[in-house]
Length: 256
Image (cartoon, rainbow, N blue to C red):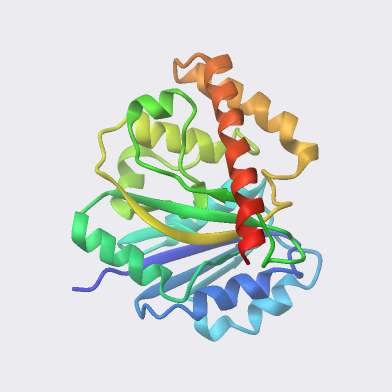
């Protein structure tokens, strides 16, 4: 039986980018996709755009929430797929066969969690690469040193959420990091690395906005300490690991 993949998009006042995200999902060549959009009662034209595709979206939730992670948790609770992944409202898939590649990797490895690579791109010019994120091979020791895969490249079997929990909504920005540390460090789930690009992410999202970076660092410090890591060491190495990503992006743009 073919695996069904649930893709969740959380949205709030994203009329500029939500159509691109939706069409990115609907253009995937994999046929067994359940698409779920959770909108936090947007005040712009986001819902008008979303409703244009209502016949091709499995579930649309539109109601106030306390932030992105509450919206994601709502989506996970209603998802019925074997595999669950996220596509944020500012982002879009790298290729039309991205989900097919992920499913093929699940069938090959029988993993619980699969992750891949991603590109950060300019918000207005998405052909301009800002950061090249090659995740690399996972080990628990790397997680303790601040390494994590790029969150929107992560796909997880649905039953894992029942065993190890959803996103901690007390974190406003770093709930994704806390979630990944819990899954990759505190459990023994089977993990596989798909060495392919999964997503293009527009710079300027919730966790890439410079105005919010200090809050993210504070939350990262809190979560590393809560998991028993040396927060100074882990956070310092995490920040340092980003430098090559920017340098690689400059060379990639020159080649293009």
